[in-house]
Length: 458
Image (cartoon, rainbow, N blue to C red; front, side, top):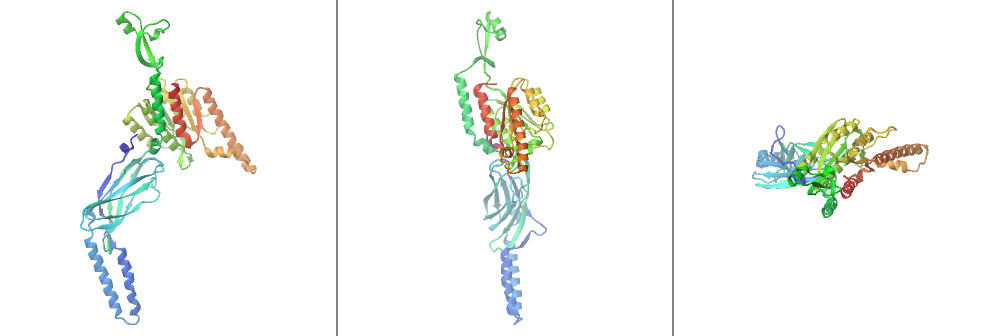
């Protein structure tokens, strides 16, 4: 997947004065003012030294005024914000700030960029210096902790001249909406799965399985033992003899990625929610499946389906999936799994591979998601991945030191065993069901998908 196509557009604006006056005395002015205050000491003995103090202060004010008049006006400065790559979840990237100086004097100062804490915890403030007629670049790092659309605001510049006796304040309106995507860096690191997918495809081309599957391969004369449903009656009429249609395993199948965005997916593991881990894994799988030639669809749901993409292929379709995954948000309500299953069954009539990323509720009753998955198994092949809770496993395996620890361990062990029984029940119904940790979710999912392709299970 090409992350450059997702890169936000640059934002550029001419600076405007900030505040009522837009200027102030510089740091050097106040330093020299403090130095001049030493004239007060001899003034205790001789009042004539007070005239020296007043003269010194007047000199500093005149010097500051001259320095201020020589500074470029705000309209002679332009600031541009550039995004070298698309910002993605839990991935470090940079933002470039460009200052263009069309004035006649060199300026140096600080740019404070107004970006939300979702992509950078501390407000970025970068030092910058620009000579006349040139542009200068500086940058700062970002590390997004959430997905979705964010609003980057204005850039504030405080600059001084060579004397540093006065300074101007200005602002450039760089307000823009930027979309933070799932982890794109994770896709770049998983090229090994793309290589394995290509190997599987080459092996299948060398060993074509005729007579199986639903995809048309060729025609031949009818032979004893051929099924009558495979007879091509139009070709038979043209040739005046029975002709049989040969089929092969489908090389382009429909793959649906179903992501639960309900209450259970709000749980955090190592800084990210389970939903974030599921979205990252879903994007990696979509990239691999499209690379393998399959058609990929997407359904994200809470109380109702929130994001839906019909199966398709191609770079534009991959970008559309990435855009939709970036906007999948967790809900506070319980997800309606039966409604999601009904949506998939209504949209996908032919047999397809359904990949369901969800979690299991800790309840004594059979969770609704298990019943929903069982419905889809009647028509489709299902990979069911339940995202586990690592701390629950640690509590269940912990050796209790007191009665309170013992009760906690027993409760955790009961929940772990209940989840294992539910996973085993899904396997008995024919699902490829796994419970994985958030950290290994992507790896497990891609391996399961390649195993399905290699064994031609669909």
